[in-house]
Length: 116
Length: 113
Image (cartoon, rainbow over all chains, first blue to last red; front, side, top):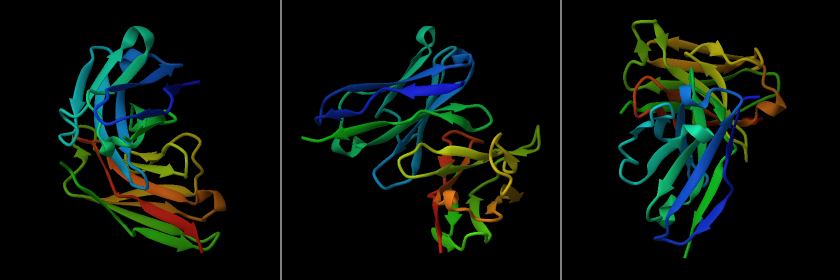
C-alpha cells in the first residue's frame, strides 16, 4: 500500500525551531515529487513548496520562500519541513502529498501549535 | 502566480440532486504538448486530509464513484456531483498544477438541504 506517514503533533513557543517529517512507503520514494501544504485553522489549502527526493531539488511558493526549508533524505524515504524561528501565525495543520498526476496520496497531517 | 477562483462559496443540495461547483483559472493551465489541463479537484471532510477526486480536469481517480465528474471550457472548470449522497458533505477545492507555485481555489462547502 502506498502511504505517507507524518510525524506527530507539536506544541512550540514563538522563536523555537521545528522540523516535521513525512515518510513514504510502498513506492519508489526517490522518483516522485513531495509537496507540502498548509491549512490554517478553519481556512483553505495553501501550497508551500515541493521537493524531488532523488536529487533534493526544492522549489518554493514566494509566500513561503525564506520562511521554511524543505529537505529530503532518500535513504530513509523521508521529506522534511522545517522552521528556524516559529511565529504564532505558523499555527496550522501541515500536509505532505505525493505529486504524480496531481497530489494523489496525502499524509495524515501534522498539527503545529505555536503559543507562548 | 495563477489565481484560482471558485463559486459558489457554499451550496446546499437535496439528497439525490445535482451539485455543481465552478472553478476559474486566471490564465491557461493547458499544456500544449499533451493537450491536458493541469487541473485537479479534491474533497476534504472534517478532520481528514484532502482526497484526490479528478485530475487532468476530467479524469476520475481510481475508486472515485462515477457520480463525480469534471469538465472544462477554456479556463473554466466544473465539478459535478450527479446525485448527492450524505457522504459527499465536504469542502471541495480545485488546484492548478501547471506552474509553480501550484495554487488552490478557496474551496466550496457542500451541505445537504
